[in-house]
Length: 185
Image (cartoon, rainbow, N blue to C red):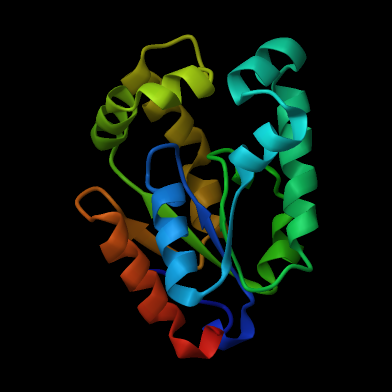
């Protein structure tokens, strides 16, 4: 686990980052319930605001358009409080937003090994319908390539890292809640 730069009591948001299928949404919902906070899934919010699934949005307008909407949403989060956020896997690409966003946020990197991520994505029929491929490669090759590109960004952005490979969402939410403690409420 990585050492935090500020005490949890100084933080007003918990932001979950990591690759697809590492548990950000599942953990985020449980964590928000546990803390009595609001939950926001950035990808779901983009779908709600644009009226298009991410796959359709990217096909029609491109990744740059999607990333611009994602960056706008991240910037909107800065003043918000008592909020648990599940970001999209590529949210860490917006390097210019994170220094300000992290000032009052605990950022938690949920990670898993590539084989586990591939198994989770393969078992989830919704994921393939909603999210387009990021490369022209097969699933495991894509995961390895994209993780290699983003791993250092996840590491630099995170205050805390949790390997979700063998943990259930409720256990992970409990770990984060314990780290947060009653000071964050």
